[in-house]
Amino acid sequence: MGDQEATLVKACKLIGEQIGELKSVSSLYKTAAWGKNDQPSFLNQALEIITTLKPAQLLQQILKIEKQIGRIRKEKYGPRCIDIDILFFNDETYNSPLLTVPHPEIQNRRFVLVPMNEIAPALVHPVLKKTIAKLLAECPDHLPVKKI
Image (cartoon, rainbow, N blue to C red):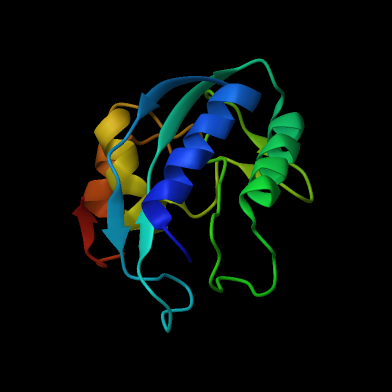
């Protein structure tokens, strides 16, 4: 919702200020809405961040940033101005009622894998033991992902 590019720029700025150093930033990618497809296309981007926060602390800070940007949680997969996910945390796994890392749907979402492949194609998924490039090649999702 809103000016998607400006929102992603703002999110990157806030992440850099409040979470840690942005080590790698992918291009922007436009994709059809996923999960609930009767809404406008999404813009997606992947970031690699260096942080001293632990996974639970990172999640709390991300939720604060989403709120700062104006996110209001109403409907799962519904329209929103921003949605920041933790995909990986080094090569660790983490499970709590609020957070699972690696994100359990990475391998099924082309809109995640394409930007990840741009910045970290050789990254090995710690559970599936496959690189991002391999997961992208095997991804069952065929929605187009267009670099902007």
